Image (cartoon, rainbow, N blue to C red; front, side):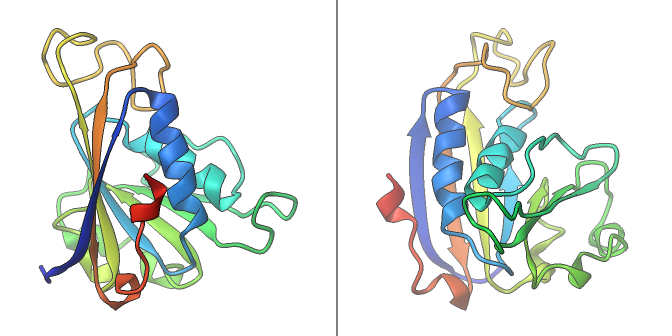
Length: 185
């Protein structure tokens, strides 16, 4: 792995705040940007991606692509960023290797879209030398009895799950040398 260009950390107190932060990040993204999301089950990766989608102005209805592996959300011509990039949302949780991820042919869209890969660390770094690795850490102990997972729920923005999250973005590659998300705090 290459040397990070910069690291930023935010804390959010709810799913809504997580989406609001992601919405601001989404507004700063361009076609060709690759984000790798990590964090435990129920940490908020899909909730975060929903906010990114709003900031990008893509078609609403973002849900986890766990079983289909890839969902493409086109940009809305009447949204906040008409003509902006689509969102390619990938869930690599069920994939066993970078070769299986390569079989999804993400290279064909990576330059024209914003590509978000949940569970992508160790598999998706080859998509681009420039990428954001975003880790979501959820405080555990109330909703799940300290098990580190969202009991009875999923990762899609259950508003009953209002536990704080620490969100850390680590930027790699030349595309992020002159772009900094620090002003989003």
